[in-house]
Image (cartoon, rainbow, N blue to C red; front, side, top):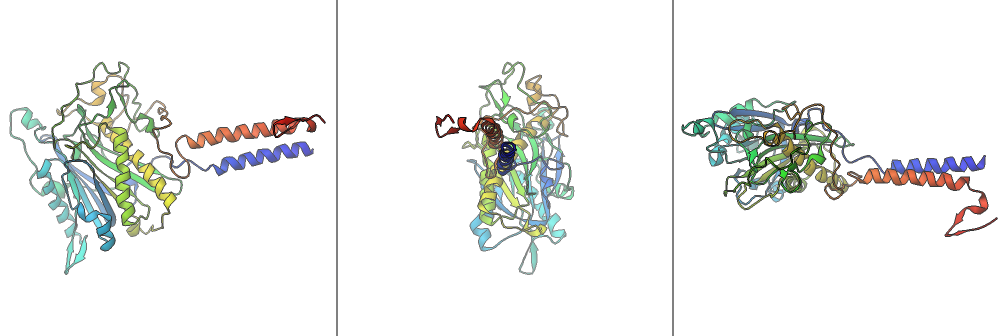
Length: 435
């Protein structure tokens, strides 16, 4: 009886050891698998297929603390310097709206429409007896990609405030349309159609991390040295990639490498969370999110790219303020890169051919089953990530938890086996003694 009681004690100890290994750092995506899963974030879009351009606006009705990381060599952005942690620590400035836009430098004018929308609702920084909406934003180069130009016409450049106002007015929570819409309408990526994508993750403690990205990169989202498979298929959660897989014919239909032209390639986006972060942490989160870019597109951040990534925390004004310790922030930062990489992949898979370039799914027949704007269904199981590909965050993630589970089970089995040996034959140190 004692022998069985001892064996059960080892079993219990093994189970407790497995529990101590902790849950994975991330659970499933949020309800909509979009940046709008983060409380306090809404998205609206204005798409002009004829001109091959558009606007995407994010409205935060309760305000947000923002930071930015302009990592490309030729960024085109607005009100970005103000978002540096040193300035925000000195004078915290709530941001109620931002935009991502096509139209190159002309697209920055969409900001005035977002400003007007916010001013009408008295959302902004109280200063000098006025309400001043500070609206950050960034642009991609998509000039000359519209249907008008393709048919010998003149390219329509969005110069008015109306596009920004229309996008801001359309901002809602819930599902976000992806692909060749909004600022992603005229985007290209490494020789295939780019676009707009979004994704989210909910951590075990309820922290939500969301990303929205416009992919217009010179680098490729697929690996020409490994069957032209998308770089981040391994990062899929659920069936969000709609059954995408390695192309059956591998790289036989691969387009020639694009010749980058300085200033014409840019990936811009934003990462949001409901975690309560300091100004310095928000700025750092924008930098950590850029790791996801490097996982999903290569090369990244070339001298001619205008890559810019914003980050925001909605916690303070959403009534969810809670201090985040170093370990928690490490987990949030590591997961932010994966969320951004998944959003990039979703942008590529959801892209539609609007006359700008063939999509990845068209270029590599058989690589996609779904990939529609609802993230597809009937997906194949996600590919396992290489052990070195995914960072292991504090609290356990990636391959760390499965390894601990296996080791724990082996320990339980070994303990039970030892208990069943006659007492004199148990191993003590490295010697087996006879009774």
